[in-house]
Figure 1 (cartoon, rainbow, N blue to C red):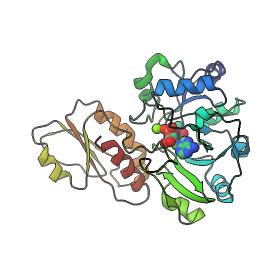
Figure 2: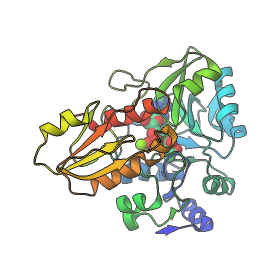
Figure 3: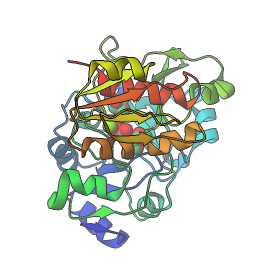
Figure 4: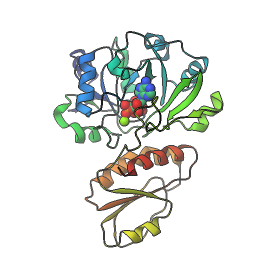
Length: 318
Ligand code: TXA
Ligand code: MG
């Protein structure tokens, strides 16, 4: 059920069962990161393949050495700059971190979420929380408690309600190769913001080619409705004449009699606002019994890059 009762959430976690937690990025499906029974339940409920590792959520940056070893200087600088916040660091793991969490890798993904409810909960626990996004594997991430409820219903005894996620896009993931920072996943913090702190990054965001980022699957975040991405909405509209069409647009509406529903991400063309609205707009479009959804590509800069990356994965054909 959807609740704001942190004590109840704690009680369930102590039984090695799962809850959903709000974060500033998306909602997470959380369990005790130090308990394999809980971790197995995360993979089962999410129907996530075991080769795709989880992110560990810490209460504070000062706990980083509880889970990671040999932390590069640039990782400490990034942690100091962005935590609590939507940055995940992939670091060498402490030996006690379960292979289930890391999918057998020598590294572990870690972040400190910037949400008062998540932090208040973590503060009451003597273990960190492993939490992937609270959606079935491959589908659109949840940005409010209701999205989570629509996916899992009463299978979750506690969905902690923390309102709409402020950022609306997953954390940016940075790994380290030869001590140099490398981007593994575009996210809520733009590439430019990270490069302002640590200089030019290497980029490895496609798992189909990279063994370092097994979760960056090329098809992800996908609506159930057939979805396309384009630079030119009016051209693509012609291909679907007579169909029930939904549009996902950056700032301007489009007139066409086949359009049943349209979502504008930000009337003023603001990337932060567009990011915050993206997944909720995709959820609404997907509930409209449309034949097709056409999404518009955003300018490829700042968070526009992250949004385009999510849209590309959402529209990738198998
Ligand atoms: O914003 C977020 O990061 C949200 C909230 C809940 O914190 N979580 C999230 O988790 O997006 P998830 O599981 O949906 O995505 C985690 C990503 C996956 O693509 C996974 O492959 C990658 O992190 N990952 C985890 N551990 C890794 C590792 N050791 N090396 C490389 N990639 C890793
Ligand atoms: Mg996810």
